[in-house]
Image 1: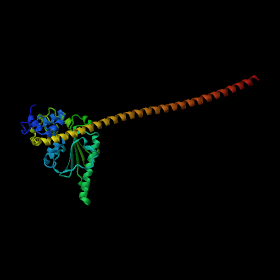
Image 2 (image 1 turned 180 degrees about the vertical axis):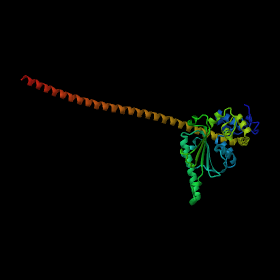
Image 3 (image 1 turned 90 degrees about the horizontal axis):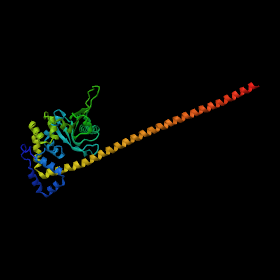
Image 4 (image 1 turned 135 degrees about the horizontal axis):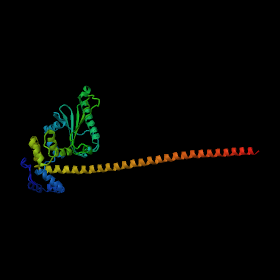
Amino acid sequence: MTNKLKEYFPLLWEREELLAEIGSSRELHAMYEEWSRAQREEFLDFCTGVRGMKILYDSFFKEVMNPEYAPERLEGFLCAVLKRKVRILRVLPNDSTRISDEGSLLITDIVVELEDGALANVEIQKIGYGFPGERSACYSADMLLRQYRRVRSRQGDDFSYRDIKNVYLIVIYENSPREFKQFPEVYYHHARQVFDSGLQINLLQEFVMIPLDIFRAQMHNKPIETPLEAWLTFLGEDSPEKVIELITAYPEFRGMYATLYEMCRNTERVMRMFSEELRILDRNTVKFMIEEQQKEIDSYKEQLQQKDEEWNRRLDQKDKDLIQKDKELDQKEEELHAAQERLVQLEAELAAVKGESLK
């Protein structure tokens, strides 16, 4: 297969050269043999430039976007996504009280504090969680509380709520949840809390959600024209043609690809990283399938419960109808009995009248 990226990145492996490197080590060869044929081809393709790098793999994303030694890259991404100038002050440990074991479907998760004190969390999800709105609201609230505690602890009696800054939750979906499929022409969703009366109060929480699958569909046969489109192409596209288009229109991305291709020259390291990504992907896929099956089971249970409730309502109604009919029958029987008694009375009166007339 033609290696179109070799011209731009001469350090890329040749396929035969890389296979020889793997075969020269018993450990690397054993690791390579554990992969499926498709996984081997994927590894060879991105290491040789037949396909672009898998930027969304956690190890690769953090290698090229690590804000501790290349903050300008993540800053550029945040500027494009938040549509404002930002500078990263520091990286925060992501050890807050997560709602549950939410690492299962996350590709990567980075929290940074910006120069103005705001917090920005960048999540990349392989497969979108269920209830994306509810989950995002809870995690954003968790980040806001985390900031509040830190600021209050630092400032003590001098604490003021004006010192609490915005929190931004940025979620990038490789495969978006079904809610996003209702907007097939929109790949950038931004939300902040506002009052319908027009009251202007900053409620601090903002959300940006980007479905890359919808972005790719929208960018088909369309040139890259904005910094946001450039960043999303970097994250979501691995075709050599798109990579070449990107680094031609936005040369700053060339250095990012070069960082990753230099990493690929360390065969043992990149193979271990790839194996770890496959392990996580397998675990996530199994967990996702279990969750989807559980959703299906819960859906069937709900349907059965609804049917059961409907039958019970019908039976209750029939019981009520029978009780009403019984009451109506009892009433008619009473009316009939009263009529019979009246008839007997009338017959007796008639007989008495006849007897008197015969005298």
